[in-house]
Structures are given as C-alpha cells and as structure tokens.
Length: 246
Ligand SMILES: [Zn+2]
Image (cartoon, rainbow, N blue to C red; front, side, top):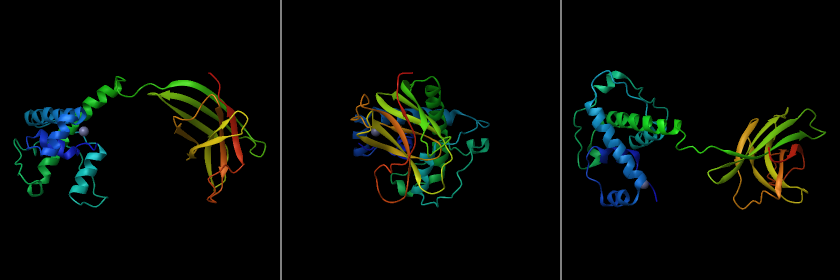
C-alpha cells in the first residue's frame, strides 16, 4: 500500500476535498489519517500564531516532494525558516479544485508550519524512546588480525532490535586504496559462509537475514576483496573472531 504524498496530506488537512482513492486510503490507513490530523492541528495552530513564531525547516522528503512537483533543479536551495515567513501564511489559502492551477508558495509556508508541529511531536516521542527500540546485545567478538595483516584488529557486536538481528563491526587496520572490505558470517568450522555486505570505511552495521541460524554462523570475518566480479570470499581475511555472550 503506498501512502499519501505528504503534500496531499497537507492539502487535505487544509480542507481540500479528498479524492475517492485518497478517502479509501484514509479509511484504511491509520498512519495517514493520523498524519492528516496532525497537519490539521498544525494548520489551525499556524493560523492562530502571530508574527515572531519561527518556522522550523521541514524534513527532506517534504522538500523533495515539493521540488519534484515544481520541477525545480536539485540544487535549489531550501528556503530557510525565518520568522518573517510566518506572516506570509495566509489566513485561508485559496485551494482551487484542480491542484495544477493553485499557487504553490502559500502551500509551502502552511506546510512548513504544519511540518514544524509534526516534527516537534515526532521528536518528542523519539526522545522519550517511544519509537526507536533499544538494541539488545546478544553477543560480541574481538576480531583478531591475520598474520599478513599485522596490527589489524576489530570488534563485532550482535544486537537484536525490534525482533531483527544485526551485526555492528569496527575495523582498525591500514587497508590499501584499491579493492574493498566485505563483512561475512562463517560457521564455526568455516565450512559455510554468508556475506553481510561491504564495509564502507572503518565501521558499519549489517542486518542479518532472518533465515540465518546464528547458533551455527557465529564467526565474524572481514576480508579484503578485489574488484574482480567474484562475489565469493577472496580468501584474504583481515580479521576474524567468534561471537560469544558478553
Ligand atoms: Zn497510508
């Protein structure tokens, strides 16, 4: 199910007639209904707010959406939130039945006000720990360097977040400019392995596919890989270590 475009949600919040399709989606989707309700509350607050009420900058996706709607080039600067803009918010923006004909600028300023309120709410919930679940550390590993990688060392942390497992790794090694580093899970006897992904820089976090049996795949390995089109392990391990309970 694709959700309502944020701009559409804002228009609905301002009282524009919902299309049959949007109405059906709103009936079915509590997330979007809540978004429209939040926008509506913010629009009321925005209309009530006088001058001197600074607007916050809306999230990137809202600006992306507006930018693509207006066919603006990618490097168009995002308008900075400024108290003066608050006075530009019209008491009641004219919303033409056909969206193509309506003026976009007032929509943006009202939207900015609405988004400011939503961002405030979301930030407050996030800060209270209501949305982002706390990761639970399952096991950890010290990653020891292989002889050909003297001085290399690393750490791995296996965490469970929201029912899913992930591995965070840190690598401290002097690596060559060419090639790339790849993170692997191996079985204890190294008879089987699965790639978790490419390590960009010295640290990264990788989701573990749900079908991986972590009681068997309990070894973390970081390898040096060449750009040779071979998806397999190069055989050139930099560090490796076995996960165990902390
Ligand atoms: Zn939705």
